[in-house]
Amino acid sequence: MSEFLHLLGSGLALGGIYAIMALALVMIYQATQLINFAQGEMAMFSTYVAWKLMDSGWPYWRAFAATVIVSFIGGLIIERVVVRPFARAPILTSVIVSIGLAFVFNALAGYLYGYSVVSFDSPFGDRPLFGSGYMSAHEAGAVLVSLCVLVVVYAFFRFTPLGLAMRAAAQNPVSSRLVGIRVGWMLALGWGLAAAIGSIAGMMAAPIVYLDPNMMFGILLYAFAGAVLGGIDNPFGAAFGGFAVGVMENLVGAYVVGPEVKLTVALAIIIAVLVWRPSGLFGRRLVARV
Amino acid sequence: MAILEAKGLEAWYGPVKALHGVDFEVGDGGVTAVLGANGAGKTTILRAISGLIRRAGAIRFRGRPIGALATEDIARLGIAHVPDGRGTFVDLTVEENLRLGAYVRADRQAVREDFDRAFGLFPRLAERRRQQAGTLSGGEQQMLAIARALLMRPSLLMLDEPSFGLAPLVVAEIFRALGGINREEGVSLLIVEQNASLALDLADHAVLIETGAVALSGPSPAIRDNEAVRRAYLGY
Image (cartoon, rainbow over the protein chains, first blue to last red):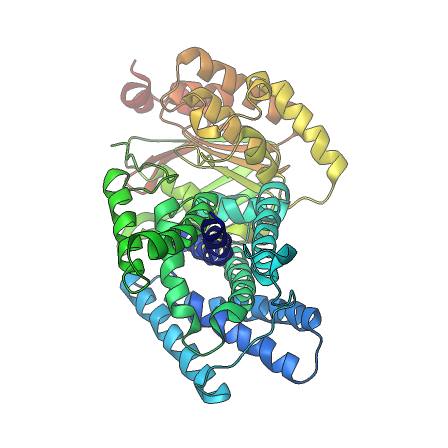
């Protein structure tokens, strides 16, 4: 039982990280119908930025805040400079651009910071939480941070005028323009926000999986699986999917098959769900009115 | 003085030219109807004014050229366009749709008043305030689209086939509301309509479009009395 709870706890911690990344993926997908394949690498790069700042003596939370802000601005700039020129190109072009961006960030991180694995401190410490074996303090902190991010993003989109305008711009760009919304800037803000929350995911993940340029690749894969499981067009379905994948990964790895095959089994479960519900657990069924 | 003037307006959908030099005006505080058969280019005119498609020619709003402006800037100048198909944000609530109409405005007190006025004009929207817009009936969505446009406090309201697909009673209600908006608040109207009779009742001026060019234009009584128009569009 205690082993189960421990697996559940660390599954939720990783799941929270997947949930944040899944949310970032869905935010951009909803606005542009594109998957940002560079989301993970951008998060990894942001984490290196944080690491560099802390290495230069910055206290953790100041480095954290600065990284989130720099990532937001970076995401905004990337959308305007790299993604926007291809807005009218075929979708495949944008896919290639986003994959290319992933390679660029990966190589840049390796070039600037080296490929050896680096340790990244957690602000929560490594002690087990409450002295029990269920969850480390960092894992608990990561879950808390993930939940905070989800709540803040939800509140932003649901209750603020800017959030409403961003939702409108994603759903119906033409009508949005007709009420005076600058749709282009809404897209840029979306990228900025996705980059910012990705950086948080990266900083929560690094103490668990250690920091190196390839840190986020597996995480992005799981996040993507979580997003698809929950429904790629539903932000909170996607977040739920992220948590579900995190927990499933651990439980499958411990009780069903060993850690070597757990990814395969987790993905197989997801495929099974999709066969039954193609739009994901909470996604909207696409019914086209002819 | 005309609030909107178009001279030599041309427009394209990709490589296809849809408007071949159209001239017309909307008087300040007036109502102009754009009539014509399906495919004549009526919707194209509104899209060209709003900058949704490639266009050329002189378009002036309150004397100021707008032919090179982006759609959102044209909207911010005070032109509200209710597109064909209504353009409702179907996944958002009625209230959220209306808030989006007021998005660019900073005068919160006036916005509150406009909300009240919109609900007064269309009480059914007040009842369905928190309902998802896509679940409203066609007539209600049309009312919502008009209300949203009114929340922009436009000087010019452009409507694309407001009667489309709606029951006659609902249409009458909507046109009554439009007349009220024009008379009481001085909002100029540019209405594209298939229903020529209805449009001519409301308008003081009308333009007849055929295959992307103006076939006839003049004060509505003259258009209504025109033999050819009566036979082709009014059915008698």
